[in-house]
Image 1: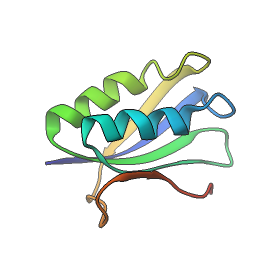
Image 2: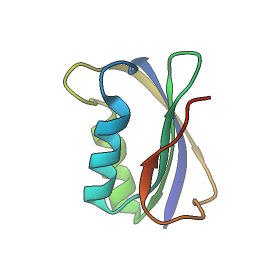
Image 3: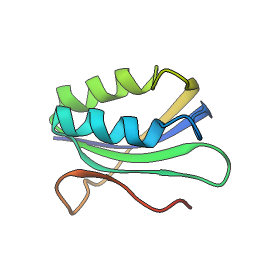
Image 4: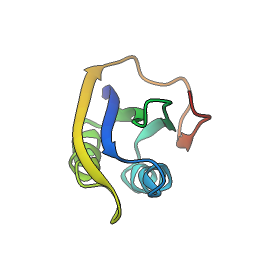
Length: 91
């Protein structure tokens, strides 16, 4: 199992990035959450099979059609306590 905390920078708010990520994570069987941050970035905790997490990261580098991802910061993290992937309130 692999778990990572992500900070996605660029034009990632107001373009459906969170909803898109929830859909992709669920298809891949990845658990965790995603939320907007006050600085305009998107933060996520992703956990699951290493191959599925890496595929989600690959997809996140492009994002949905209207997004413009500039960079993704990733750090190792503890896996979430809940199964499934959801959008949580912004910070």
